[in-house]
Length: 223
Image (cartoon, rainbow, N blue to C red; front, side, top):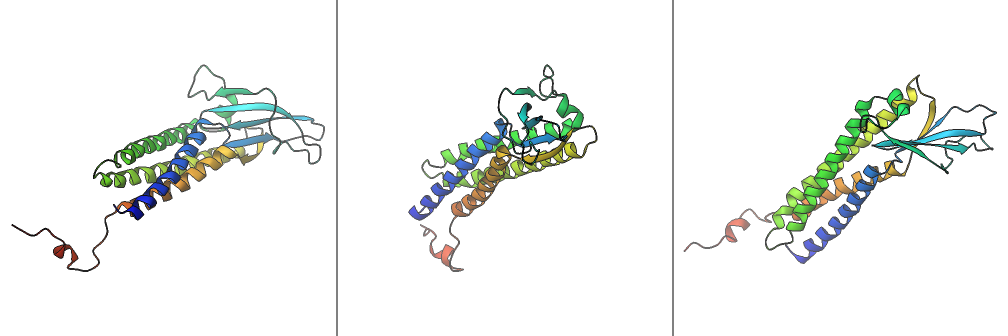
């Protein structure tokens, strides 16, 4: 591989590394979505909630005096966090169980784990490719990174549909929501992993012949 291609590959792998870190942060944190309930005029506090792939946290916060909304109030104070019941039967998470289908949560978490698995396998291939004459390992690594990005965006969409069903449900008190920084990390990780995988595949491919007879002229002479 030429020095120019090697430099491009290393820059691409750096962006992929950033995408992998963002994907890990998104999976292990619980700030994908923030929920707030309907407020009456006399309410001074409200119970805001935020959740991720594994657990939900509720916090009672002060209502914003200007617009009577706790939608964008940063939760402060003691948090009551619990893992979803389908992941840990010993925990209590009635809010999530009654307001959305657990299949959505399980699917989003499982697909995100697949994404992390693809990132790990791709990183192993990429690290082995730096050995002597192992540039070909960059091609499967690029495909694993692209698959990781696709899995992550599917997980994001499943989570988005889960939040939508939760808000639309008649059994829930949550009427307002917005997506938080964990959700943004997952979206950014998708872009870096998917595009990084495609560019890595492009840079690792051998140079195409410039002329129809070039491959024949470059062949080793027969003895």
